[in-house]
Image 1: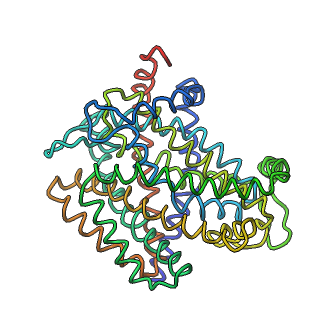
Image 2 (image 1 turned 45 degrees about the vertical axis):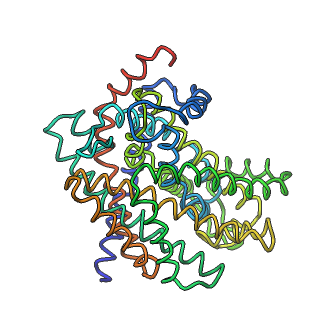
Amino acid sequence: MQAFEETLNRLSEFIWGPPMLALLLGIGIYLTIGLKAMPWRRLFLAFRLLWKGRQAADHGDITPFQALMTALSATIGTGNIAGVATAIALGGPGAIFWMWLTALFGMATKYGEAVLAVRFREKDRLGKHVGGPMYYIKNGLGKNWRWLGFLFALFGMLASFGIGNMVQANSVADAVESMFSVPDWATGIVLALLTGVVILGGIQRIAEVAARLVPFMALAYIAGSVTVIGMHVDQLPAALKLIIDNAFNGTAAFGGFAGASLWAAIRFGVARGIFSNEAGLGSAPIAHAAARTEDPVQQGMIAMLGTFIDTIIVCSLTALVIIMSGVWSSGENGAELSTLAFDAGLPGFGGNVVALGLSVFAFTTILGWSYYGERCAEYLFGIRVILPFRLFWLVAIPLGAMGKLGTIWLLADVMNGLMAIPNLIALALLSPVIFRLTFSESRL
């Protein structure tokens, strides 16, 4: 087993190495240039479309607003709390600048994914709208490329059980145990029951829960973060200056911080940014394909808000709390660093903000990824796999809550990276379709 884990670790380091990070960032830059910076220029229009989309009644299964909330339910998670802390702990404050840059170009990637998802979606035998990279590969690139769609669906299905299920269940169990001393097995069973109530109702119920829970949890976490920042607002200019300076000069070692080079800031900023918002991985367009809309461009604009909200807003607030609290150089890492920062800012209460945020974020991630994995499984095996998949999904939750997930985490990390490769190839080859559809709309 140790040899297997070492092999997985080396494979993960290779897959998520400089070539992959350069490819993910490069596709975002290419699409941003090809779109003439439209995702930046039309950001406020996208927010107006999102509000209008709450009551959309065109062809589809869920409203455009619900589609975005479903996608956000899967992306706003441990990456926003533990992932940001890891980026700072390993890459220094400068990593946050590169996380911002990744998100700004990732908006174009997420836009392109959703445009293609709506343009090339299908109806399955149950009458539901299905789409995502496997479908825009099959319907956009032709039958000679179906093998690529098959690979995406296979990697996506396998990754869902790791990064979207067992790892998340383990995070919830750890947080609940630390807060209330509840045994892991009990948390796993309750979490499986709550998840079953939602996912057995299909995409409509997942979307309804996401549309209520995601805005609430995001606003509550933002409120807690803004409170801490507001209490130390005089330190905000210095924190921003530290981020910018370290982004180009690296960070010297002091306190418990081991120091970080410029390359470390870039590497961990880009990697954690992509882990947080999933731009380029191909997961979010699976949710956006179910939206009630006939306009791929409008849904793409709504989709790109996911990257902005997830990274530019939520991750930035976490980062500022960590840096302004002064504990970023303590030597702590991951969720422990975030907990330490919030405790310093809100003594006696801040740690609960992190634990509760991790629990709710992880739960919604389980809901969102259940849909992604199910659609990938349906693409591979047909509609007969839907009920067995949901049951297996529920069984995996308590197993994840009680397990030691080192191997599963590594395997999920590998599968997650492999998902991106077919998707990025498709985005590059279908980019003329994205550009044509975008600029056929005179308002853009």
